Image 1 (cartoon, protein in one colour):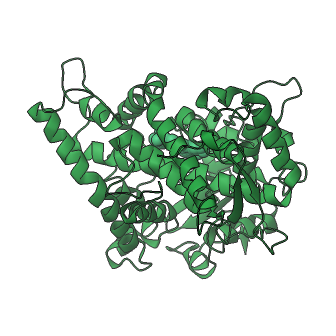
Image 2 (tube, rainbow, N blue to C red):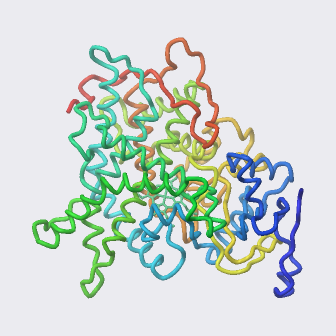
Length: 507
Ligand code: HEM
């Protein structure tokens, strides 16, 4: 049943006379948690409900938390641009606490002076243009390894060219961030063909499990007194995955800190060295050991999900619309040619590839909602009362598919992102017509790195190989997975080398 509830009587008159956004009538104490428990997955229930009500903004009460969902860009901008300072905190929730080592890192930290100083540190000293440039060689090694790994699956005895695109894309992203953070691709002895070893498979599985549970609708986030019972099992799963990631990260971090303390290491070679050596004007370390551990995990989480998911979906869409694939290849041949491999310096000229990536972010976001924002005070937005401590979720899925914004919203059509005057296409979308890097105080500080990783992943795979449907298959099934927004079945496609043999890295 629909309800337009009103705030309690003790509030100031303006707030008291302003309604909350529409939403289902909550039960006493528990709010709409029963509906959340019955209707899985929660994001599909919420989107169906909003369609039925016909609203662009809704309020669902879970326990005593007001969860505000937004599906249109105009209202989204009111939250993250006009009232950014009010809505720039993060929720105190179990999954974020566990993965961030107790809110010790910038992504999950609630608003406050420590968040402010660490955001400055991460943006200005770790993900800065200078550091990005400094680590270009490490990213290039991984771009070469990507081509080598796929090439090995195409040539030689027993190799069919049938490539699991999800595995390739996810491991490329994992390799890049491990190389930049730790200076290494492999935690163990690695694989001769450039593919993941058992350690990297375990590590990345843990990272994607953490991503699945981070900010999911866990019961104890809304009824904190139930946390010790872990009724939905989220805490156990999140803790186990975090321990696996820590099993690989922590010994490296501890050893590296020791090396710097003992003076056996004197030259910075990767981002872990940078994190350890950050100092204030008095020479005091800026990040504690726990904070370094939290940042390492969060930076790893932030780097792998969006690029790999965008590549898998975009390639699946292109295999069903080969004319798009042809345009990508035409652009690569025109801009780069066929006598060298595409480089990061080509990125500004690869407008059509960037349009394909924007289209993948729009139509197939990795997660149904943006990272939650929390309100620091009562506020009226778009004529609705938004109480202090509300969790605001911009719907990545519904923004990108909003029929009032996008023509033929369900069609994969990269051309919609090309500009008439031929101006450069960028991956960021500050108008929030879909969510890529978001905007405002909590906006992504990894735009440069995220753009390089995503464009190089697309460009190297599409320049180095022609892609076809697997034999005996006439189309890729574009169904979404039941619980999340992944392609239901991992994409497997037929790759064939398309450049002169001498361009493929061999070792
Ligand atoms: C294509 C790749 C990427 C996309 C689409 C992306 C997108 C996003 C989005 C949507 C947010 C949340 C913004 C909000 O709360 O409104 C975010 C936050 C963040 N991202 Fe990214 N990101 C990408 C790559 C990266 C990379 C490579 C890094 C660093 C290794 C990174 C680091 C962060 C951090 C630290 C935050 C938290 C900022 C804060 O809470 O203040 N991201 N990103």
